Image 1 (cartoon, rainbow, N blue to C red):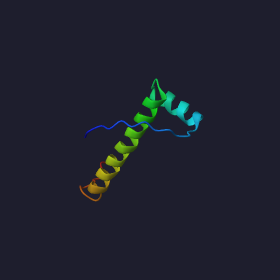
Image 2 (image 1 turned 135 degrees about the vertical axis):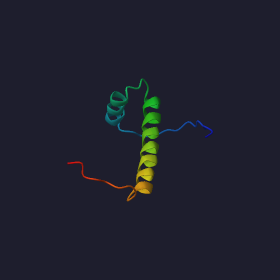
Image 3 (image 1 turned 45 degrees about the vertical axis):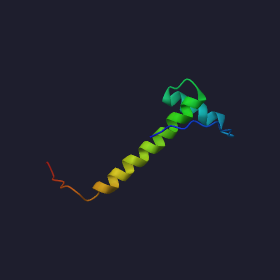
Image 4 (image 1 turned 90 degrees about the horizontal axis):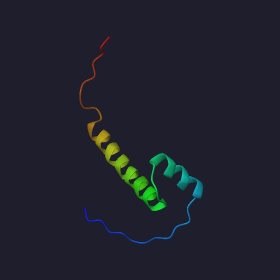
Length: 63
């Protein structure tokens, strides 16, 4: 996918940015927001995959 970088201006909660930065171990606010957006997109992929596999396969009791 072609990456298009565009400058944006937002009003964001500084506490949330710093908290996310600490969790994600990122150096800059831009890197933090970019990584957080990647995680949102990845979460969507995971949820879509789970929906596709729902009800498929067989679960057996092991004990």
